[in-house]
Amino acid sequence: MSPHIIASLISGNSPAAVAESPSATCLISMPVLLLVGIGLFTFIVAYQLILYPFYFSPLRTLPGPPLGPNLLIGRFGDILNGEAGIPQREWVKKYGKRIRVVGPIGIQRVIFSSAEALQRILNTNWISNPRPAFMREILGLVTGYGLLTVTGDRHKQMRKAMNPAFSIPNLTAQTDMYYKAIDGLIAILDCRVKKTQDGSSVEVMYEWMSKVTLDIICLTGLGYETDSLHIPHNELAEAYEELISLQTGRNLARFIAILSIPGISTFFSSEFAWRHRNFLAKLPLLAQTAILLDAMHRIKAVSASILREKMKEAEYLENNEDTAAKKDIMSLLVRARRADQKAKGPGGGVLGFAPYAMSDTEMTDQVLTFLGAGHETTASGLAWTLWLLAKDPISQQRLREEIIPHTTMSDTDDLRKIGLGYRELKDLVWLDCVVQESLRLYPPVPMTFRQAASTDYVDGVLIPKGTLYYIPIRVVNTLKDIWGEDAEEFNPSRWLSEKHTSSTPPTLTFLAGPHACIGKTMAIIEMKAVIAALVANFEFSPSYEGQEAIPTAAVTMKPADGMPLRVRKV
Ligand code: HEM
Image (cartoon, rainbow, N blue to C red; front, side, top):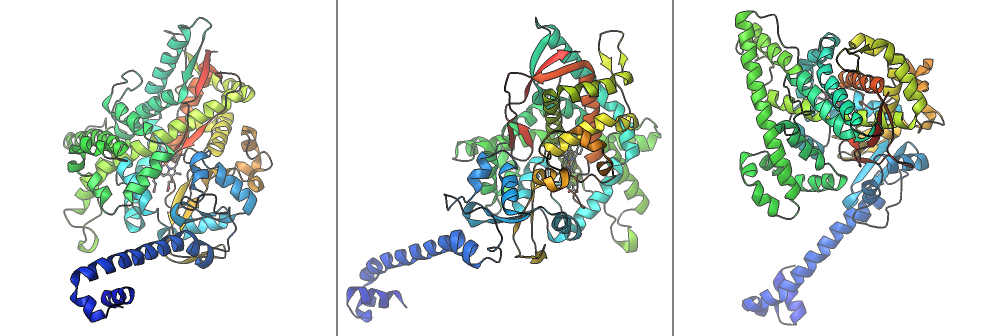
């Protein structure tokens, strides 16, 4: 129906008369168009928020929590205000292992927690269930567009190129590199404890863990000395501190909303955006983005310079046949790339196709990925382990008794040095039980997402293309039918039983399938080395009566209060 006819119906004039009077057409048709627009908008909103999820979606028959008091945000409020993974755990307990949750603006998430369903999503059909775009955009901005953001064939190639650098022989060769930072931390804590009158000091343990893990990952991953334990103003340490301070659930929700604007992540990655960050900071909602851009710019500059150094070094080693080659992961990758290029010749891969070799940009992105993926996760894992030991003095003492025979007392100070290698750390049974149990109960990455790229049947449920899967890492790690009635309690002894000493631990802490954490073994060995040295020298207890842990999660699950603990020399 043309606007003239609508206008004539309203005004009572003939359509022709209305058509001849442009001002009348304009006056009358505008409110009508406005009404039609409002009607259409209301319909779209109602369809998205209510009609589709509750009357048309094939997922509507799945059990799950009711929509909640606020139509616009769905159950998102519970997730934002609750402890990481806990609202989901309660829903799984109440509604079962296949549930649907309606989140903000009617977006549906499906939570599967059976082994079969997760196997299908993460392993068998991993290519059709990639990380969703919003997640790749966020990870790309803070950890570079490396292994964490690619999928399919590109991921397969990149992972194949990187796997050798994470092999057991390489990790074994690296273990002694941990101890410079670990010994530094022990000496600092000792000094702080000695300064107090009662021989005990309250230390914000997450901060110390963040520093020691940054120093270790920089040295083992990049061959770069940060020494953030002694030099708090180290440029990399400062930039990461800023990034970590941005990690709150609310900021994450804000970033997801902003990054859903098409093209915005390319803009944020540009030099132009960084140069105009002060202007961006003044715009509503973008203040945090400006801080993020600035921190990432500084981290990228350091990463690029590290890579340049590595390339020079690799060239020098080739020409001088030096045997003292560096053992850090980045040096190994750079040397492997040169060897590969040399063997196949320029453009001379199989059947004339260019062989796969990471570009310089991809290599810089891997530097960022190691720093982003390997630093905070391990720091969180360590802080939670110390917390659990502080609450369980018997397990803590048992651990000390296991470790002390493997230590030596230093001649210069009264500190115990451990210096244990890969194999010895792996063989300490109670240490293994404690670390595995802590990673089960407080997984540093409590959940992740996948998105169905095509329609599929999972666990008998028709999953439409585009459906978001919430991968419930913390929920699966504490399922009572797998772990027993004490599934939500800290009980390291459970790892002594035969059932749990099989080579495949049934936790999802490092995920499963082709995207499972490449740094798993490295992280576990590093955690063991740090915990062993700390517990051999110090006793940890809660810093005040009635202290509770407050896990907060954006990407990693950290203690909201930084985990203050009382530290006393043993
Ligand atoms: C306790 C410490 C750690 C935990 C709990 C952890 C956990 C995880 C999880 C859950 C994922 C899968 C994320 C997803 O697909 O959505 C992952 C992937 C990854 N992690 Fe870790 N991680 C830890 C330490 C490390 C370390 C030390 C490194 C490297 C130096 C590292 C490098 C990576 C990389 C590169 C990926 C992407 C793997 C791929 O997609 O192929 N992580 N990690």
